[in-house]
Length: 346
Image 1 (tube, rainbow, N blue to C red):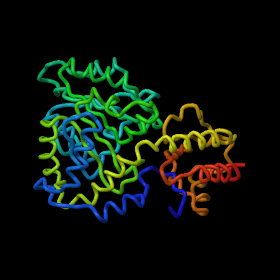
Image 2 (image 1 turned 90 degrees about the vertical axis):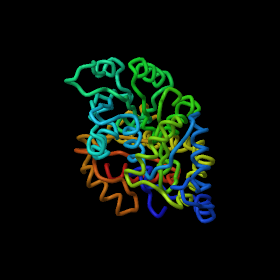
Image 3 (image 1 turned 180 degrees about the horizontal axis):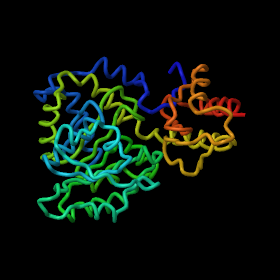
Image 4 (image 1 turned 60 degrees about the horizontal axis):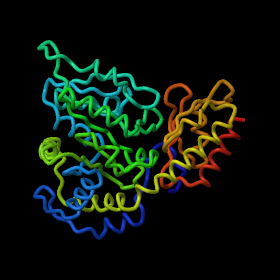
């Protein structure tokens, strides 16, 4: 990359292996089920997660709304975190596109929804209320600083949802980061879920796309919804080829991103003008704040760094910033960024 871009792992460029795979991918019409590269990616994804089937979609947002509408009907309600991507960052899609209501719950500092809160939010069978149909969690949880949710927690949420006859969906945009941080196979981490959406174009470096996994019946419904949303694809194997490389080559190296995030967090935490508990950094996302000792604002810091080719984005309200490490951020970049921030905040 020409800059050191810490805004997000969505800024990643495809690797050379991905570019070659895209250029040489065999393709066909996916609407007819004839794109061999799409079919291979979907089969790989289903096997990776221990699910029956999979569906390629253009984005995580499309994956989540497609999953929600495949599980729920008009007038139903989902349970999701108040700071979750589904509730905050997806344009109100469940209600806008599907007439599905959301009951938002407080997200705990570790990224979980309290089990008692989930159970309390499940509606009784009463015509005054929407029908609870789905429980959604996010793993890793972006708003909680990339916290990975454990197998034990995920199993328990699945058991709770199924005990009440509900479906269970995981927004797993960064689920491979969670699996790497917890050192567990991704299929075990998502075993209790009826559906999972995961992103190919964040830490896995593919240029476009997400994948939904679940049962054959669920993916059949999801495919029809994808069509209704305008997401029917033609020679999409060009995109799927990069996703195949992502699954084959990129999932195991995410630990490098986590190590660089910890190194970056430790360096930032050593700067007096920054408030950050580096011990909370488990994956590739770092939230921190400039405190009263900072001589400049978070936005001014961003302007000063951008002039030197270090892109950090705007403040998250007040003096709060987020840095995200990824494939194109190396240890030398981390050391350089910490040094420049230390000098600018001296």
